[in-house]
Image (cartoon, rainbow, N blue to C red; front, top):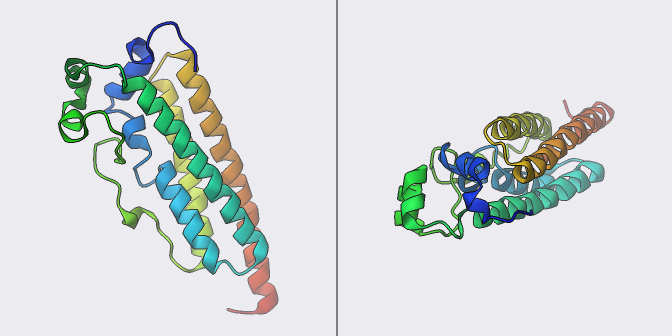
Length: 189
Ligand SMILES: [Fe+2]
């Protein structure tokens, strides 16, 4: 991220964080956010029926943890130099009261993250279908966030994250096919 002014002063970026009750502070902690995705995949891998599906979940789950770090860095840079008054004016007074400017995982409406978002069902076909939907929802969310800002650096980061969700969705579709083939071969149903 570049910029001559502190990032939080750059109107498009700050407005994106703020006027929507902030995406980054909160994006990571929603049902379709990076935290939920990372833990969902790293849990589901144990009950996948073949090694390729297990490896895919390990790869993508690990990558989602990296995305979580990207979001955390964005949030930190967007808010680290804001005054309490600026936080309040930005709609983040409640966050400031509870957490000062520490990062905290909640959704776009400020609802705290919960383990119920992990959605590991134990049925590989259900889990992979869930993951495809989750990736498509995250792709859509990143697009809505892009629509909410005019900051070029923030848009670049969001576009990168959006494109990775497209790739993940495609890979989960391949994994779903492999698992369905596995079950046909092994006649579990
Ligand atoms: Fe993803």
